[in-house]
Every structure is written in C-alpha cells, then in structure tokens.
Length: 124
Image (cartoon, one colour):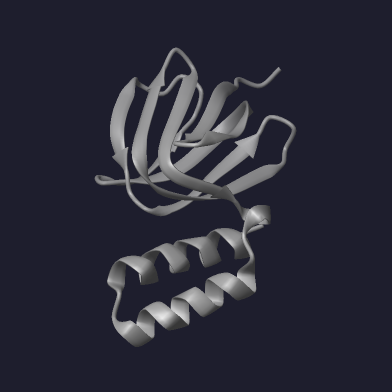
C-alpha cells in the first residue's frame, strides 16, 4: 500500500473535503508547496490560489482557496481556509462575469478571486 496522508480542507462555514491523499499542492506566502506523506511538519499562511489534492484512489480534487492556514504533522494535513470552493461547485460563466466586472472597475482583489475560481474550475 502506498503511503498516504489524511487531508481536511475546511472553510469558515463548512468542511469542504476530507480524505486520504498522496500529494497536496497549495500556494502559501512563501510560494507553492507540495506536501506528501512523511513531509516535515509545517505551518504556513495560504494565499489565494487553487489547491490540488491527488487522492489515494488516483483521482484529483481541485478547490479554489482564498486565504487561511496550512498545517502538517504526523501525516495529517489541515487546510483552514477563509473561503474554499470545490471546482465542480464553481459556475464558470458567473466567475467569468465577475472577472470582467472586476477588471472594468479596477478591483484587484475581486479580480484575483475570480481568476483563482476560474483556474480551479478549469483544472477539473
């Protein structure tokens, strides 16, 4: 059996995804990080960006994450996000409209959120 880690992706309002994985890639304030079983313990601040989870069954889960923390110890990874959406929960047309609207009014934060949602949704 391949080594695996337990992953819990939690948003402020709900548990978004939980399960066994072989790899998780997330964006932190220090850059992108990949976490595999046996990784050194870590605590970091999440940046807005897609989180990619390679499940133990060979599937891929992608989520748009906006801020929060990442913690890893004893093969348990916690992603505690301010906001998180699984890629299949994202309405692509709505995200495209939000991106155009944010660009039109010059709202850099809204533009970044919409861009992250689109990248997560199209990575399905």
